[in-house]
Length: 365
Image (cartoon, rainbow, N blue to C red; front, side, top):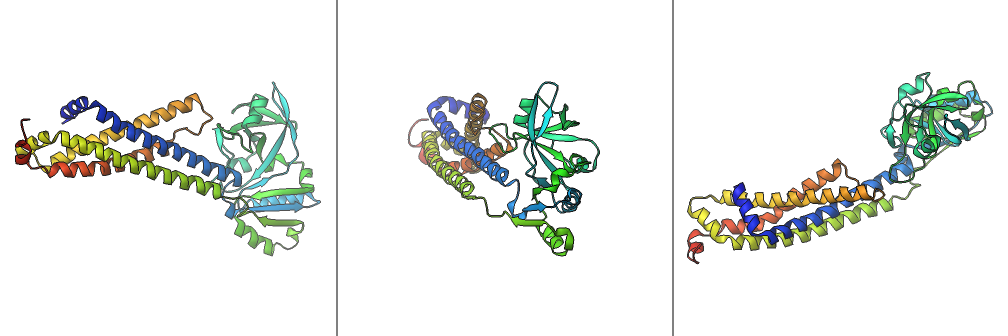
């Protein structure tokens, strides 16, 4: 079968090229749309630092820094807490120094979502209780300090091990110029920064905090909180995804119609060949399988070409939303197989309905 298919492709180069080109354009639009939609999801979650429905902004106004630290420790049992308005502190390496804004973090259970990491890892629950001083640097802070994972930086006279570089490699983020550190060691021996107005983000555990707040008594004095759910407009995300779906459906619908017509023309050109196959005892299922395999091979060629072109363009211009991930390959492969099968149906049904006698009586093969 393979030799026969290759022979037919060589004899119909223009038709084969048009079919591959049709699937190439459709798959390229779909794959780029998947990447754009994924970036929109990333942008939304980056802006909300996770799921806004589970989050609270908590404001501390306590004169006693030790009490504020104790409350933070308690709240960290509900979900990850992040101190948002810390003052910038001096940080340096042997090569450079700068003022950097720390984001002290405390949690007992790791969240489903954390800030994106370009290199290394994010803080873990073990880092919260450990005595080691570790830090996650934003990519811009790391660049200015000439720091990398595995290196030490000096913050307020203490040595911190850089365990991760945060941000997005292809765009700016709110984490590019900050430093994430564990609350426990950061405020150890110096809780003065917590004795003024402090804003804290509770990333999850909203209901548990509300229950605790209702029974905390004097401990909740100086604490206020508000929900942030619904404060960020998700219409851009919905519009981007909807536009991608609509555009992809339209492009693939046009591709299916055009490729079905091309395949139908191809079948009619080779009707004598199919007539001979049936006259020699070939089953309808064999002819159907033959046409289906041809179309699927052509769709695979178009899909692979589209992914290769997208990746090549991304390497040349990495600022464009064209990076490939497994989701691009998976969606492209699934849709290509489905559309290839649909496009092959009409030509294949037309071929199996051919009557050998009628075809052979039309003239010499």
